[in-house]
Length: 246
Image 1 (spheres, rainbow, N blue to C red):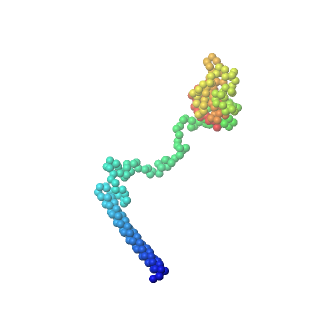
Image 2: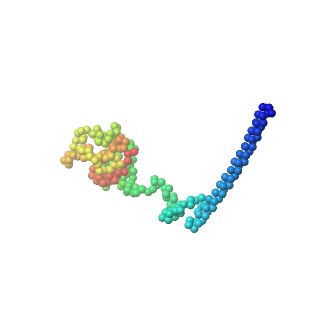
Image 3: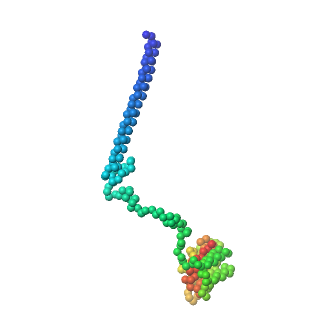
């Protein structure tokens, strides 16, 4: 046999061996896959039987859904169903639900006795306040007079162009002569929600030209001075607590 024939014969043999080997390997893998699938099905079936047995056993207390955990719960811990029963029932009354959705702006606010009062608005100086229906308000220039029960008090409006704080504005607005015999102190009179100070005489024997209660706007652009006259602080306070700088 020639050398070329021998080489050809060996090549044919290797090709045949490769084909048979590939076929055998595929058959072997297929057998393993079928065996594995069979084992998996048997395992799943056994697991399902155990879960059904555990769920329907008397120890469980009630049939449980398939796939639920089979761990036991200590007797001193309530089950989820018992915990749900202990919660207060949800209110399904449509009227109650409607009230729960009511915005804060529509909730009735506590009454302060000014509900039936009138409102005075000063367009020029940009402020407003409420006053009793039996009171009279007279406005002339930067001076406003309020009269009620034969008693009158007034307040005057000033500008604060430099936007100073109340004490600095007071020192700049009035001369040393005008501030003579006067003391600037904290005030007990409430003018809206604004900072308020009281300018009073140093003593009962001296006269303070600029005495009164001073309040400054939040933007520090305007100041008002309230002079009680013969009206009581309590009555003036009821009106001035409604005061608003616009």
